[in-house]
Image (tube, rainbow, N blue to C red):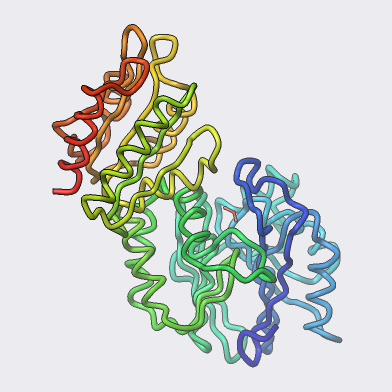
Length: 384
Ligand code: FEO
């Protein structure tokens, strides 16, 4: 695949993977992207997952023909991109690795060598001239690991963005970009909004015509759309007006209450109501929705004097990613000593700029006239 006349795609699609990063469900597989820039000098941008070394090297060989790569630029050391570095260096014994100081330390940890006689260490704004193309390296610490660099090609105005602007899903499956890019962003990079903001600020001074990430499609049109979404996500703004109701239910009584609340919210004209069963639906999707919409209702049972485990996991997922700037409501169920609202409030204590609703819902085992009235009042408050 040609990205431009002399930039080529040499990445791979993975449909065998069960969980990305050992955690994320990827029903449409995953792409590990890699690119080759052919100029007076030839550069390969990043490697791929360990299971795809043969295919990757064969893709490179097809692009370079009789020539050989001069450089391997390593932007990120997570193994989904770095696993084949040592193999590449054996295959091309004259090639040199170009990467950040921290990445070379990680190479030593992963491969017991930092290629000390075959390496170029680059730092902020260092450049590498290939002929027509000059690459400028920009540090992007914690987007998504500390060693990360991104790379700007001045000739074709391409930003090689490492994990930034990536998504779940292989490239041979057609699907909406934002849904799986958002789930990927909040799952993987969500904690590092501040660092993503810093990178966006650096990128704003560049004239960018194409974004080549390490996962997901090359972005070539309407780049403002993607940059705007990244700006919203990384600044912890809400992308859409709506209410997420995240719940757990043991015997179905909390679920009935949740569906009654959803019905009342819709009756009141709420623009979007997203209901998620934390025990059964995808946790990463629930996390994505919590950051996406401006209001959230946490609904769960008291359990062992605490809260139901899936809700605990969900709230932990939010707090460790810097959850903030939302309107929050609680719905608790408890047959003899309801504690859930108290426990959930405490868990969210450190989150900034949360507005708690005046109305909460307490269910004593099953819906009653009293709890139904609380639901009506909460729906009214959330849609006023
Ligand atoms: Fe795609 Fe952070 O590795």
